[in-house]
Image 1 (cartoon, one colour):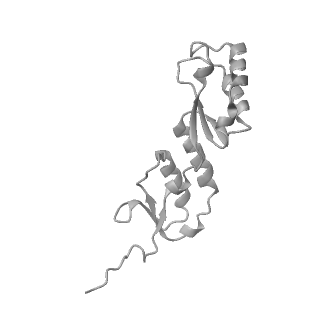
Image 2 (cartoon, one colour; image 1 turned 180 degrees about the horizontal axis):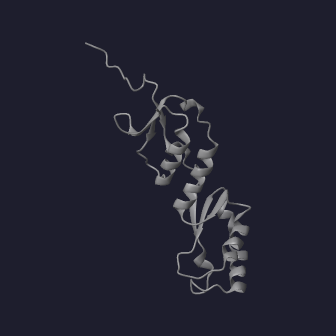
Length: 167
């Protein structure tokens, strides 16, 4: 009987998995409307008082997506003031959604990676993910990998879609 050979494992094929770069620390959404009068009116004195008495330590070592769930018209300084209180505790604060925060983290991480291990090799940009990797991160990864990779496919080794091949 012939031995079964895993040709994928023995090939030069490199897998680039964005899930490997997903933040390890918690990503938290923080709704500013909790400090607004009636949930949608900013009264400066009360707003400042609410921020002073809030327990900011619960955001220690977390990534914070700061947003307002209500249709409130807020001055820019409101978000900036909340960021002042978060600064000693949060790893990073972004004014926006959780998805926007994740994208910001991927932009930082992917721009700092060393891609030399992928030089002149076929690469699979892994497509299946158990974590909420933003679709935009795949575009960022392609832009970073293209100068190095010989070719890039999307998906899994068993069923990949070709995306790029250096000429």
